[in-house]
Length: 115
Length: 115
Image (cartoon, rainbow over all chains, first blue to last red):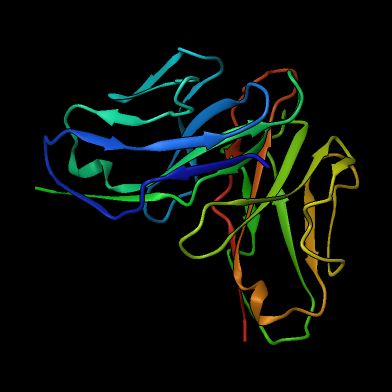
């Protein structure tokens, strides 16, 4: 079945450091790919998405590129801030084209950024 | 409308009791999803509604779990004869239809503790 694997955390960085969180997937067909973020005490929020190969999703300085050849969707940010501390989830979308979004999530990676 | 709301936010119950969670989606969204999240894991898909129709329920964890969306607006998730293994965060999400790769909006979840 479809699945998502992401690097284990926690990832601990100093402010302004470069961030990479690895995500690889297994899927039949051509799923859409997502990064969701969960800040402390809040619900999951969509961070960025890509719907086809070679698409780059970006938001709030974060980027991820849909790499079909390596089945990857790694999250990157050039300079992290303390406010980026959260749990980050990589996900893929199952379901029909144009249909519902049954998301398959990875286990999540906790990021802690200190001043 | 400020987003997806879930009630109660926390529920502590004794093993064998029944519990019910309610989800109010974003008003213009016709799709509604239930997920379960256990500690250290990503959300796990349970079931999905389009309007009042439950289009997928194969992932409901056992026949003790059931969900309804009687008028195509709010939804309830019921767990009968709870077990300690049911302790988890139960998440609700909603989305608009007709948008491949469309965004799911999550509520803050209902945390269940079974003693």
